Length: 216
Image (cartoon, rainbow, N blue to C red):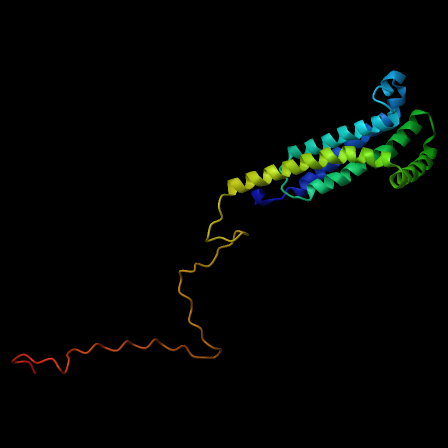
């Protein structure tokens, strides 16, 4: 039944699409941010840190808000959003390198070389650079918290709509045996069924009761 679905699959699909959109935004930032005026790029400090962190934070908001379009009840989705946040930073960096190479007129044959060097650069940054994980954290925190809030609210609403559990139904919806019904009599294997013994008849008269006149 639809009201018992966890919403995990739909949440993963919607989150994956949101991750691709966030990665595309990160790639656009990486490609065209250098075209902004110097004062704009240095307005909030070092652009090598503030610009990626800001872009990843917006992508994290996009991931978290995308979960509000579905009704997820699985507690695995907040963890999946953290993985998608890493994907925003890694895939966005690779896509930005390819977009920068294409924007500067490099031939298509050299895109594979740029992709390999970009993949190595992402791997190296993940191992040595704290700026990489700062950008990932900026995307992971809002994505995780918004998704967790959505899951908790949906689970709470689902429990309220389900109401208290019936004593005659299990958690999986199956019936529960009624304890008021008499249990069947146990018989050993190959033991014939014994008919119930008739109850002894009540005595009609007592030997010590004096008989009335005319009574045999």
